Length: 290
Image 1 (spheres, rainbow, N blue to C red):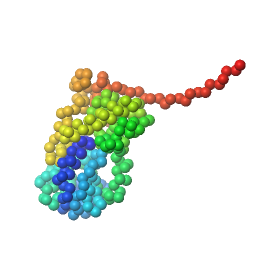
Image 2: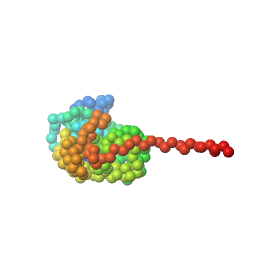
Image 3: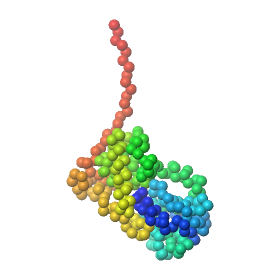
Image 4: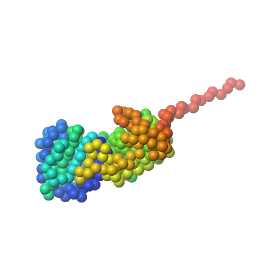
């Protein structure tokens, strides 16, 4: 699934190419792309408008159009958004024709990706319940991470993938961040102390920045906006490396399943924290009789 580095790579590549261009047409070739809204409604709302901005929140790609309209797209598991001169692609679900003759193709083999139109006045409300704090923003600090984790019993792996908490982290980058932080993926999120907040914060930021530097990870269907593969898969420390030596200690990397997702970690390097029990209030002792 494209995660923050993949979506941000696409955004950075497309922004100088499409901002200022006018959308001549939008053709929705798969009605699932706009459900529950009829494709024709989305097509009419977008056609003829100039692209004024291309933003990202978490894994969402946001195309700001003139007159206060946003085309909000989610790549889901296998979506790609490619800028090309071609008319079609094998897995094309939607085609955006630009005024310079080029096209933006939304390709998606598994058909889970979506596109919908949201008025600018409703965009924040739409995203607020779906997208949490941006992990590469100034607002994301060790203290902010600690506040999000406080009292949570969920495993750290599941906690990191919850988009309403920290936006943009999925299966791959959660494993990589936890290895950098030397924390076991099954540790309860609320078991962390300050030193763990700091280590995990650093691990998250380093992992996402590495993903960006390498243009994302192409282990399945991901391609960037130019149709090219990323190279982050060549830099993985643990993800997909079951049985291979850990880069830290040399011990074998293990694979387990957490919340239905494969999780890779080093049992030697990554400490499993225990749930912190709430402190009991001190009982008041009655004075002894004299």
